[in-house]
Image (cartoon, rainbow, N blue to C red):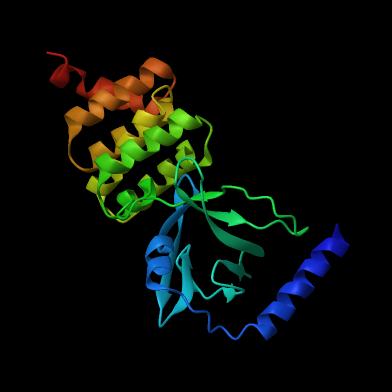
Length: 234
C-alpha cells in the first residue's frame, strides 16, 4: 500500500512539473463545471475559474489544483486526484475521485448542487434559523447519529453566545437543538437558562418544566419552577 501511495505521489509530482497550467478551458466547460459540489451533508467544495485557471474554495481556503488536463486535476490539500463527470442517466454532474491504482472506474462522489445552494451551517451563520433547521432536519432524517447535528456542539455554540451576552442568538441556536433532540433534558435546561438571562421568564419556566419532566433531579430547574409557580400556574 505504501509503495502504491509513493508511486502515486511521484506521478503527481511529475505532472506538477510537466503541466504548464495553460489548460484551454472553453466557456461552455467552465459554465458546466463551476459551482458547488457537496463534499458532505454540511460542506461544499466550490469550483470556479480566474484568468482561465481552475480554483477551489474549500473550508475557507483558496486552492489552486494541479491541472492535469481540462477534465482532471490534483488537489494536494486533499491528496486526491479528481475528474469532472456527468451521470449517464440522471445527467447530474459530479466530482469523481480517480483511484490511486490508475483504474478507469468512475465513481460519483461529490454531487454538483444548484446555484445558490446553501448548507445548514451557512444558513445558521447568516442568521436564517428556519432554513438552518430545515437543513439539519433533513440530515437527521438521513442519519440520526450524524456529527453535524451533535447535541453538545449546538449546546456549546449556544453558550458561546450566552457568554457574549448575545442572548437572542443563543436562544435561536438552542431552539434548533431542542427540535433536533426533543428527548434531552439538557437542551431544555440550556434553553431555559438563555430565556431567563434574556428576561423572558415565561419561556424559561416552560423549558425548565420540560427539563424536569425528563430529569426530575435538575436542581436549577426545580428552584426556578418553585420560585415562579404561582406566577405562571394561575
